Image (cartoon, rainbow, N blue to C red; front, top):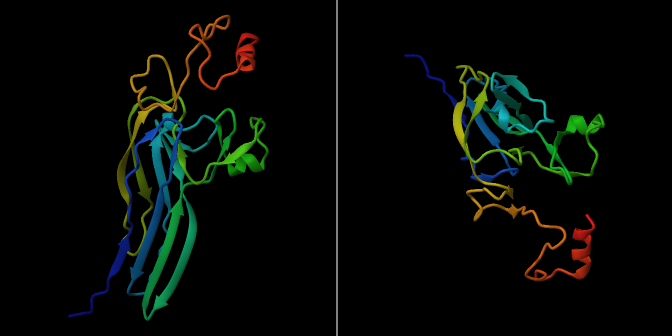
Length: 212
């Protein structure tokens, strides 16, 4: 009987945490691969999301009502242990820049090319996927997908779910006010605080409202 050679692939994957609208989360793929005949592996991963969850200024590849966020290789190590090839590769989401005041999102290429829509300073948004600030409460199906890889052409297709449970900016009809981050409430400029100034407010603050 001939000798049996093994190919091993390991990809630990965490669940997506519950989020409020406008907040981001990381997706990191730490791939470990071993091949006893010294074979190579060249994986490629995409994070598939509903297109209506993509900020309007970002340009991801679209397929119907889904968008594909191409993940980027951020770490790579490989070595031979005898005749066995061993790979440890990390893939992450593209880096995002968040515009102050507006919350608009821009990728590094847009920043490098000085996109004319950038009108305020940018903040480092990390390698995250952000839901739109004004998205709806609910559960959204997402997928981590790969191209065929290894000798046996293994494909990864992991279905995940993002739960949006509250708003970053609440509104008067919000059903999740106890969890919402900031409540925006209109005021009558001529008499914004009929019951007296709130704690911490000054007459200058009141004059500012009246003059707006």
